[in-house]
Image: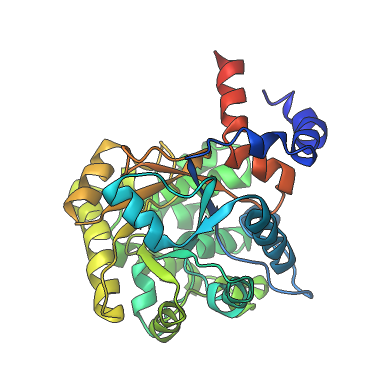
Length: 346
């Protein structure tokens, strides 16, 4: 499939997109979920390709919304919730908008676009956003600290108890991810202490100076986002790889995120999104814990296509990347890309 993908992205998907074939084959009574992770700051901004590919420009976000408004039905989170709870049929060709992580730019840059286009979004935030000074996502800060070159392998091994495993990985991203996995086995307090130790060995990293890109929403900004009419969901307390947590810690991450966000907002939090959201990061245990926590549904971040309402704690989403064209987005949104992958593998 990897050899065919460039041809699909550059030729097949644009052709199917431009002729309307993809949207005509979207199940009439289906509902798909599109997931963003924020937007890029305006230039000048020095991009970090690996991390920033999760983000889109505000112009791209607006292009997506206008396309979806013309060719699909963007439904608000309350309508989606009612459909999941009560059944029935959603409006034809329905699409729900979601956004993970709770970066500051969700409020400063994304909200004005959503408001001007008259659409609503379900924002998933971490427990860090109930604080006044939340800082960065820990694994993004870890990436910057390791990339600075000022932290030795020995420091990483000792601080994160990796037993030198990161030395055996090939490539920086693989080594970084190995430390993320190891760090996810710690509780949130222990992890924060270890990040602090690494930070103390480095000079400030210039590429994190853009607050809108790296900082998480604080409690005041979170309340402002909710007051604007957007819906808030939970995304754990500290965004670990849940499958690497002990059961007690995974339960705490899921349950306390709901409790704390509800406390700050003064309203029910009914939806949950699993951090990283793929099969390696969550499984049956995490599904059971999300149910026990009192959520009404939960989202993964893979597969695309229309959701299966009977799998309300593993609802699929199309993960939007900065390198994804509008045609490719539609191929994922309609499920065509996933079906094609399955056919090739089968």
